[in-house]
Structure formats: structure tokens, C-alpha cells
Amino acid sequence: MRSTFILAATLALGIFVSAGCSADSGNCPLGAEGCACTAGGSCDGSLVCASHLCVDLGSDADAGPEADADADAGADADADADGDADTDGDADTDGDADADDDAATAGSHTYVIASLTVPLDSVAAEALGFDLDGDGTVDNQLGNVLSALAMATAGAIDLQGMADQAVDRAEILLLARLQATALTTAAGAGFSMYLGENPIPPACVDPLDPVTCRRHLDGTGSFDVAASTPPDQTVIGDIVDGTFTGGPGRLIVQLAIGADAIDLPLVQARARITGIGEAALGDSIIGGAIPDEVVQGDFMSGLSNAIVNAIERDCSGAGADCGCIAGSNGQAYLGIFDENADCSVTIDEFRSNSLIVTLLRPDVDTDGDGTNDALSVGVGVTAVGAIFTPPS
Image (cartoon, rainbow, N blue to C red):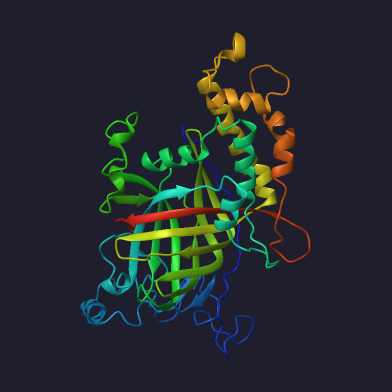
């Protein structure tokens, strides 16, 4: 069973606004660089609408003769009449996956996440995190949460194993896109992430046999972008010596709890992408923060549901040890959260558990008011090449 929940929020990207065209100026024309996008999300020329401002990603500046040839041919003359040549990830503004001109894809590289590393101790949490609030320390409370869960169950819950299995079976399916004029050095590059679905080939011949899985991760797989992907999951940054560093912005990641995949769209998101190539991305880091109101709402409910699902799957609820399979995740969860020993865990028991109350407290201040208001998250990823059409 796949229990999915969305933690959505918005943070403006750190974008350079050119002199003479401030987004705050009353004379700033819609669609101009640094100014607000039009009501339809368009911008002048090759500018891109990102977080409601028109910016220059530079992906068309050096597109070369191929882009000019397609422009002369008039591809998508109606769909791209406003000059929004899809450099913001809208590779299919008119719904025709093959209709957009090559200028939009000349600097576009698409991938699927092939591994997800979760932080299980303080060392990993620091290595896979970012300083989100500018206080000089790395923020990654997720590492503390997962480490505590593992310790509380004496290692009975293999959280990294869950993540590996979920990626192999496409239960975690994340797509990525890098837009840049070059893969070694480029300014104003864009990195986006999407939820994926419908892998071709299917992930497994037999989902119960791990050897038959990861078929979709051979570098030639094709995918669809899930309609549930939140909009504008992008960070802007630069590539220096083959490493992209970007943010803040918004990016979506996923976490596996048992057989359940949890979607985590992040605010204050950052990305550090290494080993950039046409066919793969090396050891990279995605981080950000989950606003506290979302943690206490959708996040808490989703995590509780995942734990309840594991208990129902592993425990019959009758007899000694609640009829649990020895050493199962369900048995471990009951040992932590079943406060009244009735072989079940309610949302109230989960919310009031001292471990959850302590670990899910906000640890970063995202709005600068001096009060922590979000939970920090950071994970490691690698990726291989993939074929998909980014959403319009």
C-alpha cells in the first residue's frame, strides 16, 4: 500500500533583479526581466517565469543553429508566441510532447533518482544537510528523527533498507531536470524535481524478488510526471567545476516508511549536485524545511498512517505479542507507540508520544522572526538518465 501526502509551501527564489527594473517598482512592466510574470505565467523573449518573477536561465542563449532552425520552421508558433520557450521546465505548453522546438531542450537534461540515502545518525545528518536559516550550523532534524526511531527499536527497523527497496521497486519514483548551457560551468542553471509514475520498463519482473527489480534504472527508462507533483519545484544556481549549487527554492523528495512512500515538498530548498553528466548525476544532496503547520497536519497524519499500515500488515492483534511476526516493523512500532497495550496505535497515541513530541519540534526559522517554524530535512541522492516530458 502506498500512502502519500503532500507538504506544500512557498519561498521566493533568490533571484538577481536587474537595475532599472525592480519587481517592487510601479513602472516594472509585466513580463520584463526581474518583473512579475503575466497572468498567464508568460515572460518576454526567452525569460522564464520562476516563483512569479521573470528571470533569464540562459538556456537558449547558446542553443545554436539547431534552435534557430526549429524557430525558422515555426514549431509551436501559436503555443510559444509569447517567447516563453519552455526553459522553465514547461517542455509541453500545448500538450503535445513532441511539438516544442529544440531550443527548449538544447540545455535540458533529464534523470530519474537511482538511490536515496537517509541520515541515520548525527554524522550523516550533518553531511546531508544545509544551513537553512543562516545561523552557521547545518540543519537536518530528519537525521535525529530517523536515528531515534532506529535506536528505539534496537535496529529492528531498517530505514535505509526501506529506502533502497522503495527506489528499486519504483515505490519511490523521483524525476529530475537540469537546465544549463553547459555541464561544467554555467550561471543561472535550474534544477527541478517531479514525482514520477508509469515507468517503462516496469521496475520489477517479480516485486517479491529483488534481483528482478531496478529495470527502470538502466539509464534508458521512460516515465510520466505524476499530476500530483506540486508546481514550481525548482531551485536556481550555478555550476562550477561540474558541481551545481542552488537555492533557496522549492523541491520535492520522498521518504519510505515500511511499504509506504511519503511525498515531502520542501521550502527553503537547496541542492548540491555533483558528478554532472549527460547520463548520470553523482553523489548529491537535497535539503529544505517542512513548515510546522504542515508537520502537525499532513505530515503527522501520513506518518501515523504508515505506521498503522505496518502494524496491520505484521500483527493480527490477538494473542501473545499481539500476533506480530517476530522481528517485524509492526512489532517494533507497537513497542514504541502502543501506550495502552491494546495492540493498536491511534493518531492520538502517536501525537502524544514523547519521542514524536520531542523530535518533531521546529528547529529552523524560515521567516526571520526569531521563532523556529519548520522542520529541517536533508537526504542524499544519485541519478541516471531518463526520458520524460516535464509538465507545462
